[in-house]
Amino acid sequence: GGERDLYLQVHGALIPRGESGHARAVLVFTDITGIKRSEQVRKDFVSNVSHELKTPITSIKGFVETLIDGAAEDREILERFLGIIARQADNMHAIIEDLLQLSRLDEQSLGLEESPVNVETVLRNALERVREIARSRDIRLELRTDEACMVRGNQGLLEQAVFNLLDNAVKYSGSGGEIVVGVRRKGAVAEVFVRDQGVGIPPEDLPRVFERFYRVDKARSRETGGTGLGLAIVKHIALVHGGGVSVESSPGMGSEFMITLPQEQA
Ligand code: ADP
Image 1 (cartoon, rainbow, N blue to C red):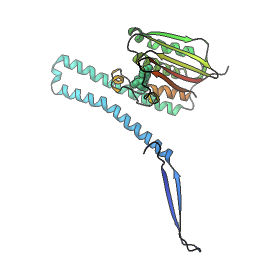
Image 2 (cartoon, protein in one colour):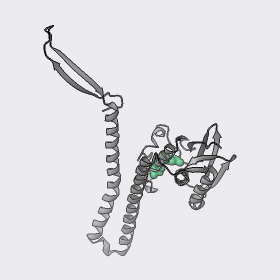
Image 3 (cartoon, helix red, strand yellow):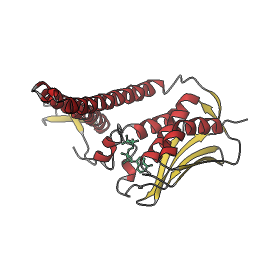
């Protein structure tokens, strides 16, 4: 079951004694390692989803039962518990929405509605969506687009990818500091970057942050209402555009997330 194991399916047949007088056996080995791996990935995913949805459900059930047992008579407790229940329900809703989006992206990998998109427009629209929360946390936002840059793709999805990165940059910045979002041209590729001065990510976690439900700090992520799917969605959006994602970070200093996209040929 480990990463390096090889799975072989064996088919055997005995061949009757021939003229030579020897009995022979034929064994056919088929390498099914790939199939086994994707089976395991699917099993892990289903078990992750179940766990992620079970956590808020269990909490909701607990609070409801306590209310039924009489706690509802205290107006203050009633209101506090209902608030918690509503937040847990919102969290489940967010997880389900993100899962649906991921499955739509799986189907969409071909036949995506696309057109030439100006990257600067994407960055500006995404910035608008975090302006208010950034202001409330005293975080400065800066846009850096030195050159005009066009890509081919779906503007709504690209905006969502950049928004997810900006949303994280704000979430994991605490208060104060600066977030820079921009695009640079690297040959045939446009590289969108979102840089923050937040908590950063330990080197051992870096390779896994784009995985579904992977979080560096589970408690903190839940507290901020995170689903653990934001970066998986960013990665998927980049992939359906023929691009990719990467990240550099040092704990305590900040992080820089990048999305590379093929540039639209003029
Ligand atoms: P979440 O909903 O938990 O934010 P994401 O998929 O968006 O899920 O991110 C996965 C994990 O990567 C987060 O839980 C967090 O630990 C880490 N992370 C993402 N963005 C940043 C960032 N800008 N700074 C520090 N850590 C981050």
